[in-house]
Length: 356
Image (tube, rainbow, N blue to C red; front, side):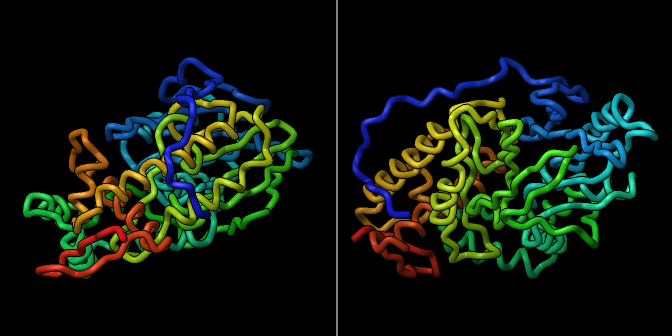
């Protein structure tokens, strides 16, 4: 997708939230017939994730399906225990666990849940593979890859110390990922509770992020692909240092254009909302503005970190730093792909970016 980088006349986007507040941890709110909203804690500044408990009963049996699981922490397991007590019975057990993508807050407890209830994991293949591989990236080989990547981005000594400390972080945030799964592909129609949910695979935030649309209910489970307030993180990571995820993300926005403005969007963060097309426009415009600003910042040769400090004026903690540099590089790589920025290797292997 090519964007017009010139300034746009646009009003400030205000999310049209369908709810004023979220359920407490371990509680549920029914947002559509058979679709229950759960909220679980996260140990970050973004301190929560929304999960979905779907009635998966049909003419043959009763049961439940879970969409996304939360991160692997004791307080999240404790909240799930309250859900088990209030919803799961011998007559109506958990039937399956469905995961949108491989990030720890989504797949973190998939292994724990599938083993406890002896149920299958449903997931896009690339997401399952990435989760399995990321769980193994704990040794010196990964740390060396990360050091090269962040050094090239212009990390100083303090930042590099933080980078070295991240080794094995993913594995610590997920339970053992199941060794088998049922593959979800774009266009698949999952029968959940007697209703058809169409799978829409988006890209950019994750390799094969699965969203699920139920036309009968007018509901889209959007995961992290479309959020009402914050922009989904679109990052370049050490494992794929030449990636152009922003191009993939912007192209994916078109996949949700035909769902209609009255669709109830169930995101992984913040509150359920309506007005999907307006939010898609806002996300497109947000990135167009960031790209325009990035072009001005790169009028003279600069490192990735120097661009980061212009794009993110607020103070960043060590967790946010890595998302910020990944997103900075995503904008730089997009502009490189559009032929608007060139990159060369400067002193000591540090990359320098300059607009044409």
